[in-house]
Length: 172
Image (cartoon, rainbow, N blue to C red):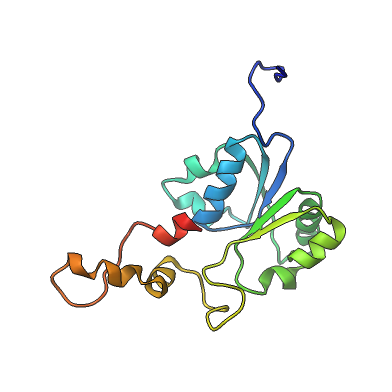
């Protein structure tokens, strides 16, 4: 059985390079699982660090990852992000519709440089249809999915109920 020098067994995804461009809990959770299974995950954070660092779950979500601070509005930093993404096996992003393409970090541009790239985009709604440009905030997705109405019976007042468990984010 092959073992690494430190005596630990390599993960099933060992050797897989992942660039995480997301700024949302679903992205952090997805890449955390990839890191848990041995993938090399590089998390590209905005200047000042990811807003996820303020979440209590940050140490859990960040485990096994490396991070690099990049300003995607800076041409030099954007070029670094593109180069890293083009050299990755997997890119995960959670931008609003059209942002990745505008930055040159969309699937078509990156796959032209790396045809084997696996590209994952986490959005609140499908990329086509009436809600394509709607933000994917948890309460909006929960409302559209009917989750808020489903829990209306648990309170005595009329109307929808906001549920603090991020059901839609977990499924994303």
